[in-house]
Image 1 (tube, one colour):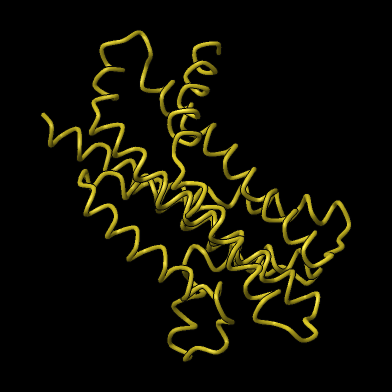
Image 2 (cartoon, one colour; image 1 turned 60 degrees about the vertical axis):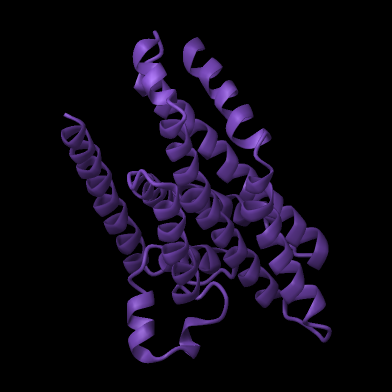
Length: 247
């Protein structure tokens, strides 16, 4: 356990504290969009429900950025810089390395959710029961797992240009087609059908149902679970494929 905690602290400092791009793209940019659409562009009376819905959407968007963009890049950089090869030659195991990565990601996702919630609550005087805040934050934190698996899958491309391209081709369409920027109901029926089966849509919908005290559709839980299983299988397959290619 001591080895895991030491590795976690070192990895956190190296990957996040010394990485200003993470703070900008994964945290400050979604907060900026939230304030832009709820305070700057909406000068008239804005409903509390809109502010709550957009808070959830921008939190989900931030989780996409940190799990898809940042995680895939961090994993690739570790491989490129020879860190994984060094771990193979040291007493530290790969299990310790990946445990530290997941612990740090869990902390980062938790902090991301808290910071955006606090900014939204203070800027728009959002008032919810503390149980609702906890349930919404807890769901978003747990549901970030498929996004984490997506970031891990992208890291197997082993080329920085390909990773950046894949991250862009996945992250922004996922956000748009899942209704994070504008309601999915505004899009064509065919697009709605696709968006409702993407991994981001149910994450956002369930969280919005919690904050608005609406009925949660259990089909959304099923979509999230299904994508989690699929992405776990993809990560396992890519890991075995990569090992086979090296040998």
